[in-house]
Image (cartoon, rainbow, N blue to C red):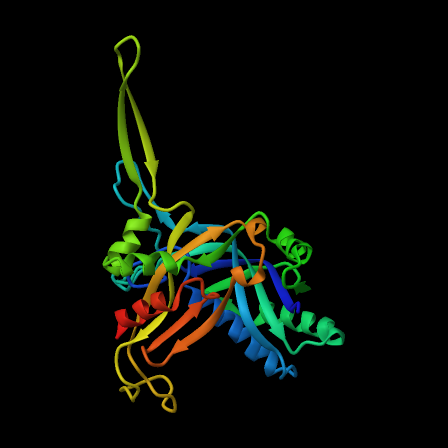
Length: 314
C-alpha cells in the first residue's frame, strides 16, 4: 500500500548572522536542533493564529550556500572569527565581549505536515509569509528574504513525485545523518571522539616510483576514511542531572536539568540522489531511559548499534 506524504517547501530562505557555534567544540553549520526548533516555532505560531490542527512532523534541511564568518591572513595557521563592531566604552576602548561564530545562509526547508486541507492552503500560504516577514528567526539569525512557500504531494516510492520536489532543491545539499559510522567504530572498541575525528581527517600519502629512465617520480594522494562530504553536526542533548529545579531558571513551571551536546557525523548529499523522502527528513526522538533528546532520521542501523549509543551515555 502506497503512502502519500504532504510536504511544504520553504525555498531559499536567506538567514543573516545565524549561530555557527553548533556545540561547545564544533563550529560551522548550525545544529539540527536549531532547524527543528525553528519549524516547531512556526507551527506554534500557526496554531495560535487559527490553524490549530496543523502539525509539522519532519524536516529536511537543504543548504544552497553557507558563508562562515572567519578570516585567515597571510601566514596564519588557523582561521579567526570575524567579530562584530561593538561600541567603544567611556574610556574609548573596546569593551570585553565573547566572540560569537556567525554564518550567512541560503537554505530550503522541506516540511512533512498534516492538518492542512486543500481549501486552506492559500490561507496558510499567506499566513506563513506574514510570520516569516514579521516575527521569525532561524538558527538565531535574521531572515532577510525568501521565496514563496509551495505545497507538494509525494507518494512513497514514486520517483516522479520525488524528482518533482528535488528539482526545486538544486543546486544544493541535503544534510543526512551518518551516525552509523560512529556506531560501527564504537562497536569495534574505538572511542567516540576518536571515531569522529578519524572520519574527518584527511590522510596525505606520498608514493615514490622510478620510471624507465631511472628518474624518481613522486606523487601525492589525499583521501578520507569514508567517501562523501562528511561534517560534524550537533543533533541534540544528553541530560546530566535529574529533573528538578535550578536557581533563577527561566521557566519556574517546567522541570530543569543540565545537559551536554550530542555530536555525530552528517553528510551533505545532493538532492538528485534522493529516492525516498524519509532519507532527508529529521524528527524529534526522546530516549528517557538514557536521558537522550535527539534529532534523528529514519534508523539505518541495527538495534545492537543503538544499544552501543545508549551505553555511551548511561
